Image 1 (tube, rainbow, N blue to C red):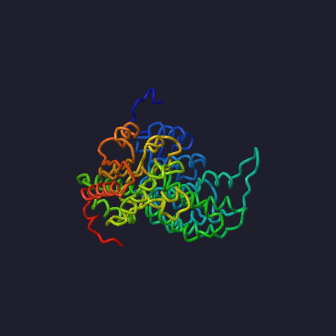
Image 2 (cartoon, helix red, strand yellow):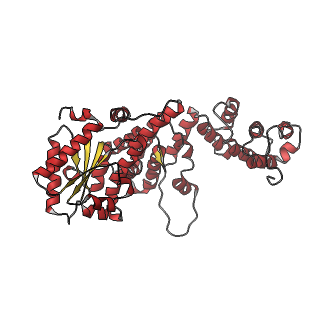
Image 3 (cartoon, rainbow, N blue to C red):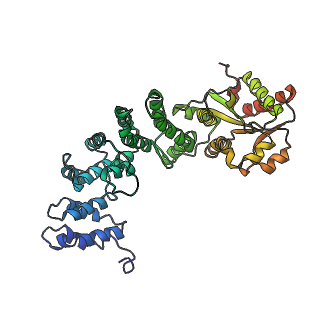
Length: 444
């Protein structure tokens, strides 16, 4: 059809619409599929919406055609279509399991955020509870197993994208604890946990840093529950994948754009204020990354980093050195401290330069990338480089392009107190130029 009619307008199909809306015409009942095919081929058309609503609301139209018309309506309806909402409410029968009723409920949620429809679907998620054991080998997949895998029934709730429903998801998580310690219900429990996780974060979408923090708080509150480690690890994966600090900045930039305000000229005080107002706890001034630490590191380099940390502790700034963290693993140390830190100070040797772009340097790369992403959205430098016993030209040769140029850098040739003092002074000068208020605060 598109080969013949490259373009079709609503005005051109008005005569067809009139026929399809006329309940006295046989073609309305014999060929609705042809009309719906036309609406699929020309998705830019708006007028088919009225016809599709009429078909859905007509019990004389074949059930399969009404179901298909409902699927086509999802892309045409808007929250302002109150007449359509009334029809969907009539089609939705909470006690029924037929496809028309189920899809009507889906549209009431996805388009109209109808509270009764939302509440009903949340309750149905709880009623799905059943033991399940994964079958080995080739087998027929039943409805329950399919839902555990695809979460299709839960998808309209997952896609609500509104924090006002966070409480309902916390309630689902609380309900999941009903089955704690019951292995036969673990698949269902994981199903509920995945629904809550997908509501807050999926792919590159994040509902909000506050919502993610709420899920983390829930896991901490119930850390003694059976199998909760699985949920905690998923939260950590999301936190490492999504830079919540950069997300807050992007969201502020987007709000300014929507309101047609000038682009935000970020300053350090403005950046800290925005992050704090959105629940970010920035109680670490310097994330001190001994990037080349390890069993093969020289004793002199380790002593230099320890002295540097001790010297910075005596300044108004609050540094974080992962060696001082009580977390059990490097990953945990990074995850705990990264989002709480204002600046990154990389201490690297020639060994670090050799490792930075290899697979074993995943944590180092994560630290660096976290701050680079914030620098990109805020357009403010946040990274300071300290090289130990290494020529600056060597650094430029080995360092990734993202760290070349525009960086403050100082070289420490030995681990003497004088070299440490020199580096501390350079760091303090750098921070003072960026945000002098950090050097004026009282040390707590």
